[in-house]
Image (cartoon, rainbow, N blue to C red):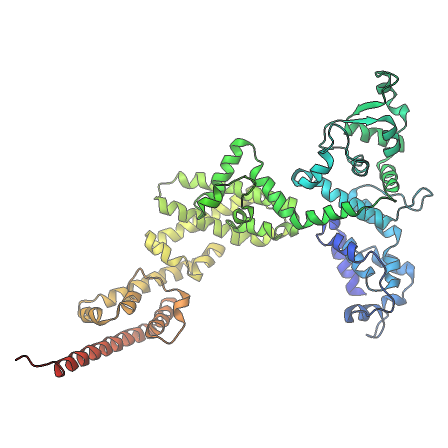
Length: 533
């Protein structure tokens, strides 16, 4: 029980706990009481019963349980209620869900009144689905079709009733019959008598702004809580399968929809700038990018071009909150725009400009990845980290001295460790690597080793050249190339003289073996050669 209380207290301060991705899935699976004779999991049995040495939850009174359950967020409350019928009954208590209703939507929900026929748990579920959909109407084409299909006339009755709960509705004014206004929201004609006076007696259709309807409803019912209560009561006999279906569709596609909206719905000048920054020095398929913004555009491919948009697509940013996360993505590309301007203003070659840009962004992403997974990261924070990363990238560029060296050290573990930490120790490791690489190169090019260069096979000789990168895949196997690669790798990364001596020994052995092979081959040819008459 103490464990349950600690978990609940940790989640208690999350005002938007109802926005959890799995909440409605929990509702759909746990809306009915479980069978008392059904099998319980081992974890829930130990929690509910007293077999483990303590008093289980089922042995506590309802009053004590309610005090404990007040500490739980909606998701935890639903999960606990799914364990058995007894806890399902307690977890469905109206007082618990009225509290969550108030905390999540900022509106109190009257409970236990004579006119209240909607359970608080059911009210929470319905308003949760509606608010989630309405909050994202700008990118939800399905909901837009429901709400805009009959403009200037209102949507069908089911969706019209929900709209009065919102003070700001992104819909044009609607033409409504006076009888519909009274029926849908309980607003009497006396409140809009002035509108009727301007019309003829036979005219029953009036033009209403949605904010005006919201204010009329508040004026008549007395508070927003009573408006919610009235609308929910009107909905009690309705079929909400369409609302649930649209919610589940949105939950499955929300990242794709919102990313598409953000990427392609910018004003004309900003849209061009965003496209340029999105593709700046980024390897991409020109064929796929040519359909930018069109219906058949491969949005998933565009998201895959950057690690941050890939994470957004998978729901890994800002704890899976799509709206907060898209602001993080927007701030990231705003930083990219500033970074490009800074780089282009420096006297660097074309290749170095791209390298500075890519390495700086990689460092920024490595440093802020965990922070982006938890919360919104502002543009200022991005730019602050980017400036630090640029100074480190410039230090690595100076250490490398030229572009060839730079490309050679980018795969080193010390390279990324220096980007993340800025420790001079890792920079010294990079310098040592380049110095040892030069020593191997200088040794094979000594005048007395000219015969080695002639006798060594090409694949082995190439490994000893300065500008050759040794891939980790080449370190595996029993071939001479793999053995020599491993020895050179160990020497370059450790600096142990023993490994360098072993490298020289292996090279000499290979050269002697090859010389013996050539000598034997030449001798055999001379023996079996047919004498010339």
